[in-house]
Image (tube, rainbow, N blue to C red; front, side, top):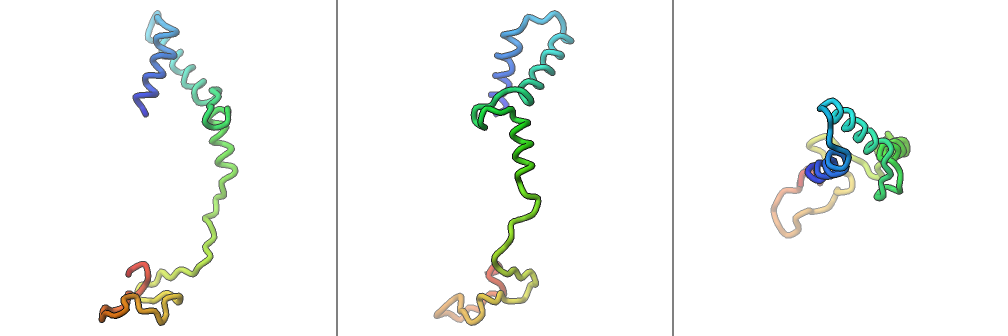
Length: 104
């Protein structure tokens, strides 16, 4: 992906807007191009909005809280989860039952 971006940069800026009088002119033009690319360019894959605007909207709409779990979680090693009580995880064998489903 980086190579594609570099090719785009060269095609849109360096070749199309050059030749440059000095390295300073090219540096200013590169900074302007990066500003346009990140802040003003309308991106078709995200609804014709600039990438920074899309990212800001996404971050304000994403909850900072983790998703609520609808099941109990036991993190104490050596205990069995209540939903596995009375179940033989290996029917017909003499294998010991695991202590916790996640360890099984």
